[in-house]
Amino acid sequence: RGGSPGFTELVVEGALVVRGTAAAPAVFTIDSEDRAELWFGVQLVEGGTVDAEGLTLTQAGVGFAGDVTSGFRLADSRLSRLATGLRLTLFDDATVDRVDLRTITTNAINASGFGTLRLRNSVVEGNGREGIVVRNAGLLVIDSRLSGNGVLDDDDPRSGLIAEGGRGQRIEIWNTTVDGNRLHGIDLDGWEGVFELHGSVLTGNRLDGLRADGAERVVFEEVEVSRNLAA
Image 1 (tube, rainbow, N blue to C red):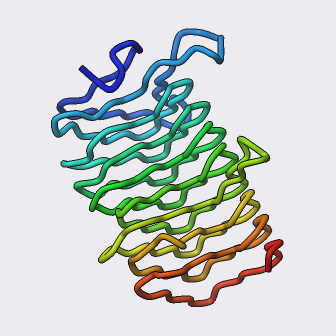
Image 2 (cartoon, helix red, strand yellow):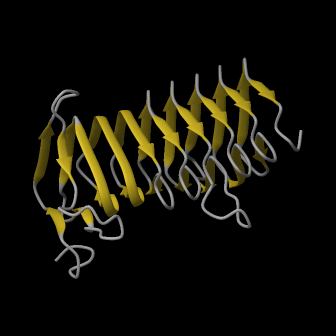
Image 3 (cartoon, rainbow, N blue to C red):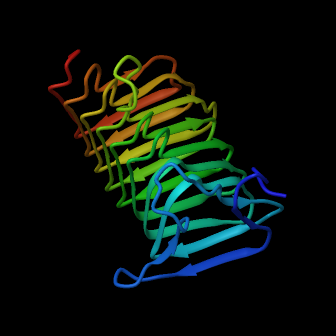
């Protein structure tokens, strides 16, 4: 009854609680050494909630997917070797703390809906398409790094962060480094909400560090934009 009945998947209708540690993480993966084999991943349905710490999730079509209606928290975890990391429709807020999202074929995070995704002390690095895609949802990024994303296709490079829609919403980025992405660092040409950038560095991206056209308001405070190749 989940997103892809042809694959093994973990369907969450109630509460999924995971408690691993750095020394002994909980591991969600497939019992195969063949990297071409995948399981579907974790699918949230009918108000399912997630509260996970110390989780390693690999070799899946998607790490977590579905509607967030009653809470989503992921902390001290690692998501890698996935087709997509997080694909969430936010009707409630979601929190991602101290999480590494690396070597994911498409997007590390794809967030839509009307809630806010809070990303803190996390790394989004070396992913195939955009590191983060936001459609209408709010986004708060603190003490994180978006680095080297958009590497899947040299003929179709992608940005670290792209956002669209979002009228009445906010994107705030604090104390974060956005560097080495294969297209732009941050692409807000389609964003209609408020954008604030504080204490952050945009450097070494292949074209622009930041593109913004049509946002309701743009705020910069103590921002370094340097060595982007289109600058």
